[in-house]
Structure formats: structure tokens, C-alpha cells
Figure (cartoon, helix red, strand yellow):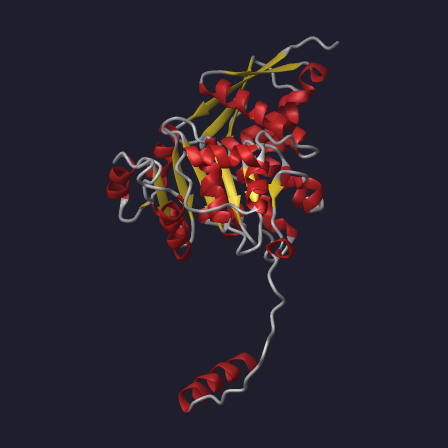
Length: 366
């Protein structure tokens, strides 16, 4: 057995959401060189000196996942200190869950228990369909989950019920969604919860709009359910970071494919940097791969930061192979929708439409 001769200290900065590796000692080693080179290969946002390396926390978790199994064989030891220790311990637990859950899941509740618990939470005004209960049970078996059901399957209802069943005391719910989805989230509370039975569970969503100060006041107002658009989110980065750092928050990304650009976009890079802060993360999308399988990479890295699932997708692994059982999906067939009957009617353009069409067509032909 190789004697442990190299110690690498790991720290976490909650203000910048970055992790730092520090080589303790006076001599660099081949292992340290390998760790630094690997970090630089997967992350462009870094800073390093002879004995230190600083990267975003999600990247730090990826490095820990990749190098931790080599500790005894290579003769080194990771030593997380301060906040980093608790966060890495939680990451290890989550990573083990990912590995186990990809192959097989054990449902924690039956359909009858789901109904019973939801009734106790005043969720009595909407009857869940069998496939919705199945998806709820499946997602409850995961620490974080993806719902890739087709449009019309009730992803909003399923996710709201999931939150009620999984929430911790004092936990908040923050839904990031395009503005056209706000109405569905605002309606789901009224349509599902009997306010006379439980006024607390009937609390409506507070829409987060305005500047930093206004939104900070809303987040501290005593409300626990919030809606925010992707565009608004990137304008209040410091406020939302501080909020997620101090409060237990379940974060839901509705139409999560909107972050598919990952670190190549403001919304993607912000969400990836924040990914380790929520107590639970769920992503919803009826079209998780609108252009190619690599659209899933950043979504999976948000859902399971540091687990390496996104990297497997980037390297060409099939999405089903990578995901395993880590998602729920209701198909069109399960919805029982009748086949569409299409009838086409020709309509002449009016003069204004014809003029506009001619201009657009001419530009397209250039």
C-alpha cells in the first residue's frame, strides 16, 4: 500500500461559490500536476499559483469525484475544511444515490399513500391521474429529478405535489420559468389546494420583478413560493445567490432546455454556479433535447453537479444509457389523446401581407 505523503486541502467560499485546492507542503508532485491539468482542461474560469487552484464549486466537485478514488493508490489525501467538508459529504451521498438510482429505484410511497398524504395537505381539488401518481412516486425516490413528460401531462401539477410531499420545515419553492408559464404556476395552487382546509398551503406564488432592492424585500417578506423569469434571474445574481445560501430552497427549472447553452450563456453559467446551493433541484421539459443530445449536458450538470453525467453526454454516450432511471416521462400514448384530424384551407393574403411576404422572400433569396 502506498504511504500517504501528499495532502490537498479543499475550502469553499460561500460568497463567490468557488472551491480552492491547496497543496500542503513545499514540493509539487506528479499527482498535483495531474489535478491542475485536469481542472484546466474542463474549466476556463480558474486561477492558480504554484500550490493553489481555485475554480467554481461545481468544477471542484467534479475534480473530487474523479480523483478521490485514487487517494490511496497515488499516495495523497483530500482534506476538506470548514464549509467544504459538509458540502463534499453531501455530494458523496448524492453521488452514491445517482449511481444506485440509475439502475433501479424503490418507490417510497404507494398510490394510496400519495393520495392520503396529499389530502392531509389540502390537495383535494384536483384528482391525480394514474400516470401522474406514478411520476410523483418515481421522483420522490430521487434526491433531485427530471420530468420530461410530453406537453399536457401535467408537469406543473406533478411538481407542485412533489414539492408538498418532499418539503422540509421552512423550505421555500423557487420556480424559474418563461413568463408565459407563470399563469400555470399561479393557477395550480388555486386549482389544487382547498384554502379553507389549510391557508398556509394555499399561499400563492409571489412574482419576483423589479430591481435588486425590491426583489430582496420580496424574498424576505415571509412568503415561501416565488416565480422568476430566466431573464430577471440573471439581473439579480448577487441577491439570488445570497438567498439560496441562507434559506432552504427547492429550485425548479421549467422549460429547462432554456439553459442548454451552459457556460456559453449568462443564464446557463449562473444556474450551473448556483447548482450546489438548493436543497432540491427539479428540471421540467417536454423537449429536453430540442437540437441534439448535447442539449442535455448542462441540464444534467445543474441537476447533479459534479456527478459527471453531462460529460458522458458530451463524449457521445446515449442519453438513455446515462440517465437510467433518473427521470420521469409520460408519453403521448399514455395521455390517451385521439389522433389529430388535419384539414387545410387556402387563404389569400391581403395586399399588406403580400407586400411583407415579398420583402421577406426577396431577402431570403439573396
